[in-house]
Length: 381
Image (cartoon, rainbow, N blue to C red; front, side, top):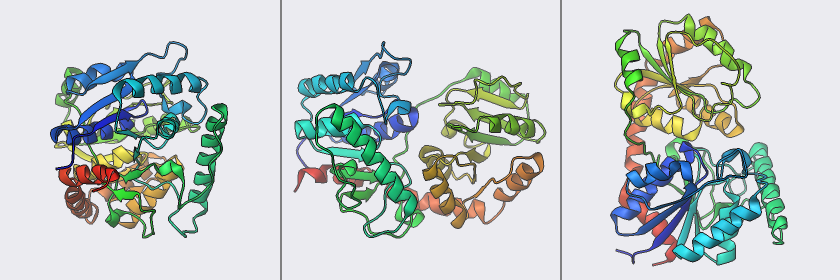
């Protein structure tokens, strides 16, 4: 077994970034490595509960918590964040940093301290493959590089080039939370590796939700909308249709940017800031989501077909695959009739059969030894 190493985790502040990092941390800890998390203070009790040493930071000068995803491209407190990173690195002395694609301070800190960087990516590979002609991914690479160079300029660092082959935005190892069988055929840079779902969720108890489920007999739909960005009116349209359908809806409203609008919540909906699918998978018929990585991965790993309502570009790209491999359908129209037709279809074959087949494929990649070996490969033989 390779020598024991020390890892510093710095994920962005939301469950979708935090939980895959916890999965990786537990893999490393089980084999003797030391791990530390640097994250928002709001997550410190949860991480410590699961045995992970954590340094929680309170962001008193902003309405957003430390390393909030909404600030990834232009954090007004960037210099202070970098200073906090420097102090923690000097204290922990990590052999490597493990972070997420949009955590620009982690890339800068790894470079300044000459520390290897491992990136836990999304299900959709964000950039073009080598030689790939993809306008959306090329645009995204240019945009991300531009934001990164603006951050570097604030710290008097030179710009980096826009390069699909040699972008520093991949770190020394980049883990795609996917499998080749559910991805496009392309040539990826050598530091990119498939890592399966990297799925983890905490224990969960919600007495109010238990009462809600006990009070009805209708089929259950798990809903995870994440953010709707500039389409908040969609939430009202969905509520109108949900109220008319013979289902009960468990709605995870984490990172919701649509609840500021006043809407009457139908009696067949239960809303909570966090609802893990695994706790209720036995009674959930299918998943309605915006095709973000964790919602898609959790649906597949729990054998649930997907109804996709994508809003970000990478979610739209992932939805193309969801439809192509018939593990779900894209919802193109919001009406009671359209939802009923889509809901009925995804509960039939081939969707149910296909999602179970892809669950088996994902389980092959969910191998702790392989995850450990992939991460430790950055240190050489």
